[in-house]
Every structure is written in structure tokens, then in C-alpha cells.
Image (cartoon, rainbow, N blue to C red; front, side, top):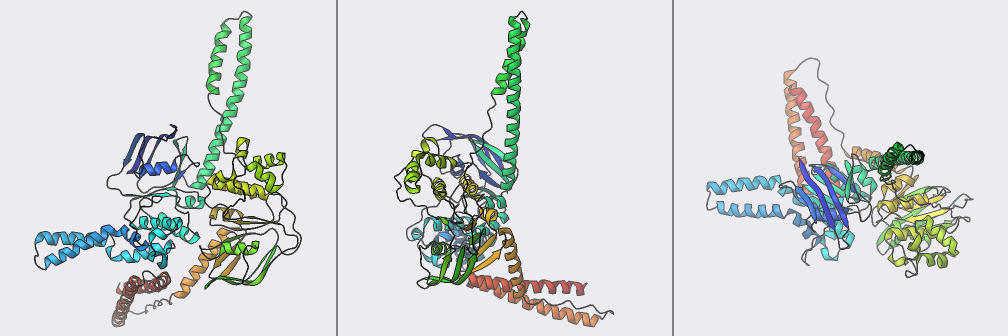
Length: 624
């Protein structure tokens, strides 16, 4: 069954150029699709058309009857007095309306128990239960906790939240709604690793249809079953996730280039032959003119195929300075707090030459503050930080700032980096700033272009300790790949903060996880770290569970009386466990807004359910 069908869709803006120019594709019910393409290719425009926010110029759009669609990038306007909790509750408005009608019918039935009232009551009660009416509070807390929306934020006015916080709340509201088709436009922006992984898990278990635009390559790799790339306003199809897309796109390019080169060789051969035949024709062999003209028509056809184009790549490398000594950076007993909030205490860490360390952790744990301490922009409350005597560092901050944004790129390189005019041109060219682009003012550059320029400036000398704070934050895939290309051949010490798991996996050989004021130091790749964390979690959960009752060995001789007694005892134990599980369910509702308590109750309930399953198996064995 098709959920979405798009035929020859066209859309142009004021310049009259079609950003979507005959876009056509179908989406089957339940498919999870990644929408790809360079910035400005029309991805967000497509979503705005599908959601009804703007109209298309031509073409047809079909949406399956009765299917509800939600767009995450679209943040509705709410009344000024609405808190975050009020916004989340709007997701359950349909359920609340049914509940209010049930209450009305209950009052009516006290006076009138007619068949019509009873039938409506039964129907609405079934709908209320089917839509999760008894679990709305628990579901709101489950989703809010997963997306890092704590109780304090839920109590605040929605209008007072930051842009990133509003995006998270809107995503939570959309998830809570009874939505059949999700349109996710950069859903992982403003999410930390924990919240992003929670969202991935939700999307992977979502039975409806999902279309996702994202610069998070790991996210696309995890949730996308196939990819659609928008190129020149039209759709190109890839029957796999993002990794498949990358390989298949390169394979198609290589195939097209091979054909192009073959065509060029053929053109050269035919051109030479046609010229020779024309010459022979002038020498009296008139019939050869016809063959030469036929060859020239074939040449024109071959020449109509353009040369395949690929994205420009950086031709830049960091020139690293060889490191001498035992330590790049020593962190000895470092603590930092702001008021009553302690970020970390008594950190003891050492970075040695050529190590590549990713600093990860949830938002607000103090990662950027930690980097500022290393750079001397903040002072530690206790302890000290010391760099090795031969260390020469370079720093790319999370928020790029230029002292003179009114200067051109060319002048910035000359005045801030001390470059000669030719050197400024050369270095800018290596970072894909060429022609008239070098005379743009720095303040007009996009976020990705500013990051590229700052990296270009960092390469002004030999370095052996590179520090990056969220280097790929809010950048498109092309800009992320440019930054990766720039540091790919850098071989000395690297410390970076990032939520970009693709970037972490590519560069990190050591993981520092900042959590609860301490740093977990793991020597290995990000994938190995994830496996380690999964093992640790499994061990903790196993330890939290009570030892399940052991199956009693069946007696060699049947003893019906003893068997009946054991069955009766097991049935009593089953009843007690079921009562205990029901009590845990009640506690879940009572502590719906307490994330830590919910986690504890969930673990206890899981242990009880494991015991119950064991008892049922034993009961079935004895009963048979």
C-alpha cells in the first residue's frame, strides 16, 4: 500500500528557477527513507509542501486516506500562558476529549440507561483504552525523559525556551501524537548522544512511515531502509542506508566516468576517420562523404553526454610538528563548579603523543568548560593543567568568532595570519575559496564556510596538539566531509568534543565519557566503547535482579499428591508476583515525572516478570 505518491512535482521561487523540477517517487506504508541532497536542493521545500505549509506549482501529490502526518521542523504557536507540559498535553487532546464525553455519558446513565447511551459509552471506552488513555501521564514522562526534557523544563513557559529546547519539545509532542507519517527535518539537532540514541530506537520501532532529512550520517545509517537523493530537482534512488548510498553513488560515478572516457576515445577515433574519409572523397571517392557525415552524426550524439561531475574536495593538510617528550597534557586533581552546580571533581588524566581522544557526554555535563580550562579561558577551582614543553596547540571553538567580520577572507588571511598575498590565495584555494569568493566579507559566510576558514587559519604553522569543540555542529554533510578531509592526515595528538558519532568513529582511538562529575577513560574505538557500555549495563541489570527460583528436579517416581501440592504452592507464588507487578505499575504512574525513580521501578518490575515467567514454565511442566 502506498502512503505517499509524488508525480512530476515542480516548485520555483522568485528567481523563476525550479528548485524541484519533475520530482517523482512513491513511498510504501511503513518505509523509513532518508532524503539526501546538497544544501538548497529542495529537501525542506519538499517537506513544507507535503505538510501543506506551502503550495507546489505543478505536479500531483497523493496521501493515503485517513493517514495523519507530522512535521518536526514546524513549531506551532501556542498561547502565551502555555507551559512545556501544556504543549506536551496537546498531543493527547483527542484522548482527553473522549474522556470528557465518557464522563458526560456516565452522568447521563445515572438518569437514563437507554441502549444508544450504553452503545456510545462502550464504543468510547474501547477507543479510550485503545488510544492509551490510562497511560498518558506515563507516556509523556517516558518520552520527555528520553529526549532530556526534565521536570523543571516541563514546568517552564514554552515561550521562554531556547530554539533547541523548543525543537526537542516539539519532537516529543509529535511522537506522542497518533501520527502515521513522520517527516523529520534535522531531528538530531540540539540532541546529545543519549537523546539521539533514544530517538533512533523509537524510529526503528515505529511502525508507520518515516521520511528523514539529516546531516547525522550515523542516524541515517541506523534508521534508513533506502535513500532518495534530490539532484537537479529530480529523484535518484538507492536501495539501502547511508553507507550503501555512499558506495553506490561512487560506483555509479566510476561507471559513468568510464563510459565518458570510452566515449571520448571513440570520438577521437571517429573524428580522425571522418576527416580521412572527407579527404579521400575530395580525391574522387564521392561516396565516402556519406559515410563521413554518418560518423559525424554519431560523434554529435556521443558529445551530447556531459562529463560526470563530483563534489570538490579539499586539497589541504595540517603540517604537524613532531612531538618530543612523555606528555602532551597533564590534568592533575582538576575540579570545577559554578555556584552550587559541580561539573567535575579531582580529574586525573594524561594525554601522550599521537593519541586521538573523543570527549563525550550529555548536554550540560561540562565538556566545553573542560576544553576552556585546557585553553586557559577558564580557571580551575583546584588542581592544575600542564602542557608539555614542546607542545604547540591549535583550537577550533564551537562558536566561531572573528575579530573583524567586515574584512574579506583575503584580508583576514593577510592581516590575521601574516600571509603574503600569494600565500593567502593558495591557502584559501586549498580550502575551496577561489575566484571572487576570497573577497566576500567574513560576516556573510555560512556556518560551514566559517569553520572552513578557521581551519584554514589554524594551518598557519606546525602543530602537535589539535583541539576541536563540536567541529561538525550544524554543518551539512559536505562541510563535515571537508573538515574530516582537512584533519585526515594529521598524525599528532587530537582532542575533540563531538556528538557526531560518524566523526567519533572515524578519528577516536580513546574515549573520555564525562558523567556525574567523573571521566570514564576507555582506550579503544567508539564502537568498542559502545560494546563495553552494553556489557556493563547487562551486568548491572543482572545484578539488580533477584536470583530466579530454580526448577526443582522431577521425582523419578510419580507422586500425584506431592505434585498437586507443588502446583498449588506455585499458583500462590504466581498470584503474589502478579500483585507485586501491579503495584509497580501503580508506582510508575505515581512517579511518572521522576526519571531516576522510573528507571529503578522498571528494573524491579523486570526482575519480577523474569521470576513470574520461570514460575509459569514450572507450572506448565508440572501440570502436563
